[in-house]
Structures are given as C-alpha cells and as structure tokens.
Image (cartoon, rainbow over all chains, first blue to last red; front, top):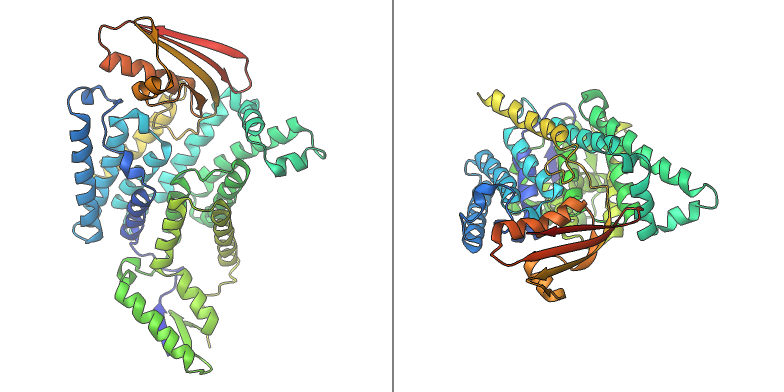
Length: 339
Length: 111
C-alpha cells in the first residue's frame, strides 16, 4: 500500500527557508529575468561608471550568480550562498537602472531574508510587512493616487469588462474612488495582519484575494512578483515537513510508482497519508500528499514564472485562497481525522 | 553583530521608504509606480534628428511609447546616457508627454 508519512503542519515549524530560497532562484532563471542582470550600462552607483566593460561585468556577474546557485542546490553552505545570490541581485540593480524593477528587488531581499531566517525566527513577515507598508505609505502620500488619477488613466487605456459592466449601477468616479481607497486600506491592513501571528493567516487570505483582484482587474502577470509573493506566503505557513529532505527525485518516483501499484490492487484502502496521529486514505490522501509535496511547489513556481496563461494563474490563485480558507476554518482537520 | 546587521537590513528598507517618498524615481522603496506617461521624444545630435532605430539604439527605449513608472525614469534614461557616455556632440532632447489624465506638457534638455 502506498504510504506517505508527514507530520502535523500546524504545531511545529521547520527550517524550510532553504527550499523556498531555491524556489526563488528557480523563478529568476525560469522567468529569464537573469538574462538582463549583470550589465553596467546605466549604473545607479557612480562607482560602476567606466570601471568595468559592460560584457566583462555581465560575464562576471552571471558566473558568480550561477556558481552561487549551484552551491545552493547542492546544499553546500546553502544559506551563505542564498545570501550571496540576494546581494548579487541587489547589486545588479545598482549596476544598471535600465533593468530596475521592484519585483527583482523583492526577490533579492527575499533571498537575503530566507538566508537569515531560521527555525527560531522567521523574518519573512517583517519583510512582507515592510513591502506592504511601503506600497501603502507611498500611495497615501501621493496626491495623484488619492484623487483617483492613476486608476482613471489606467482603465481609460486598459478597459476592463467587469468595470464596464458595473458602470450602469455605480458612477465611474465612485467606482474609481472605491478601488483607489480599498487598495490603500487593504495594503495597510496587510502590513499589520502579516506582522501579528494571530492575524497572519487572515492576512495571507486577504493578500491572495488582493493579488488575485489586481491580476484580474489590471490583466497583468506582474512579472515574477506573484511567484515570489506566493513563495513568501508559503514560507509563513508553519509546517514540520522538511521540504528540502522531501526534495528527492528518486523518492518522488518511488511514491508515484507505489501509488499506481497499490491503486491497481483494488484494495479498499490503496493509499495512506499520515500526519502525526492523523491518517488519511485514498483520494483525500493523494490530494493532501500532492498539496504538501515540494514538487508541486516547484511546478507552481515554474508555472507562475513562465507567465503562460493568465486565466490559469488566476485559477491557481483562487484554489490557493480556497485551501487557505479551508485550513483556517479547520476543514482540513489534519490532526483529529483518523481511520 | 548578526542581530545588528539584520536590524540594519530592515531599517535601511524602512529608511528608503521615507527617503524616496518625495523622489520621483522611487528606487528601492516598494512603491508601485502611479503614473502612465504617453510620450514622443525628439533628439538631435549636432542638429541632425535621430530616427526611430537610432533612438532605440542610443537610449534602449522607443521614440514613442508609454512609460509606466515616472517621468523622471524616462528623462534619466536619456540624460544619464549623455552625461556618462557623452562626447563633444551637441545634444538636444525634447519630450512631449501626457502624464496620467493631465494635459500635454513638454520637457527639454541640452548639454
């Protein structure tokens, strides 16, 4: 009988930051963002002006990032090399303002945050809180955001069917101001909710709903931002699963083959999924083992990073919201349900 | 020491949020850019106007387009290139743009 044993995902926390760091590195490569990094074409820091040939700096940077990534994936001083990768990304942004993007800056900061986080302290909520606070305070301070200028221009240039459909029921100005101020309020709440452990899960749901609605209304992938946001949210959910240990292709293949073998036996219980004292069986066990599998996280990271289908991206975000709501409402009773 | 460095890492980010609040470019302060600029740029080098390809090659941006960040980003891409890599050529840049819902405006620069 196929069997996967995993511990409770609530009570304990494991140091999975290395695994999530690997996902960020994977995302940077998969999105091809890495190909733009390392040039010193238009440096933000004058130090890089005329000090290095553009091609030379590109090759050096690419070599260092690649080597550092290899060490991370080979688990050789991985936290140190995650840190180096993060610093290299921030450095690449300082080397060339033409490629500056908040998405890449966030990816770099997240790599540094993962490298300094441990079982004893998770710094990711602080990093996320700073991100949302920065976004909130800037919008709050900026007059052209508060008076709805940005939203008005955006929807004039990028008409959205939902917004158009709502226009007969609510006047355009009220609609724009609702979206403008709801964004402000949500970003402020996110900065607070994610910082407080008791409201953190609620913050994650609010955050996923917020990012889902921005993708839907603005019809944009937002680069690797969504991938990095989902990874950072995942790293906040406490789990005793050691994703890095589970990250074994042979283990994965063995699990799949044993699942198929046991399924073909037509027994009443053909697959079990254990989580501390709780055991799930058959299809529920398969779904849970898929959800809590590091390869699912890798697949989702690649999917988000490649920016293939915006409606699938929205559908996956929607599923993640449902899963979080089920978890927060204890519908996934991972502890008490036994056979 | 480690604690101090970690604290510094987050304090720098918070500091940049407030430091860049009045700065249009908003580098490293987590601000989503709130402006959309529809622009057309005209550049003459020693009195000769650059065509679309020459403009793209020189500044790595289109001669006509939309800038989704801020006017300063657009102007910096041109002026910084001239400041860093410029020679004795006489450069004149004129940028006609509309920022968000505002009326048309023009920005000029010469070395």
